[in-house]
Amino acid sequence: MKVFWGIIILSISLFANMDVAFVKSIMGSIEVKRGDKMIPLKLSDKIYEKDIIFTKNNSHVAVIFNDGSVLALQENSILRVDKYLFAPSKNLYDFELYLSNGKALFESGKVGKLASQSVKFRIPQARIGIRGTKFLVEAKQ
Image (tube, rainbow, N blue to C red):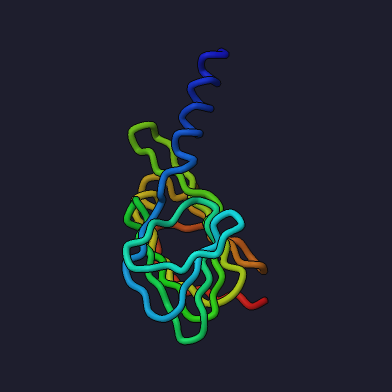
């Protein structure tokens, strides 16, 4: 039993520092908070679990996740990548985003098709379960 839990913990730690997405398109001023640092985002930059993406006035960004899910954030948006795990060979999936402000267009990829119950999109007023759909959501602080 100890070996089983050791393997699980090792597997999770291996995924902890892996990129989960990349910037597909960008316009204007976009920053990501990674740990305690604010970093300007550029085309093709990697996105990691726990990153918080900030779009400024007249700015937008499109992000492609490793499973093919697409996220587009409009101006003045704040989105946190709470959880992302896409390991189909191990049948492990977990995907949770939190939009605290702004507008986002989301289309789920393989995680939504293989394990739709694993995809969650939260806003301050609600939690949305994803079932392989495309939707636009707005959150206001």
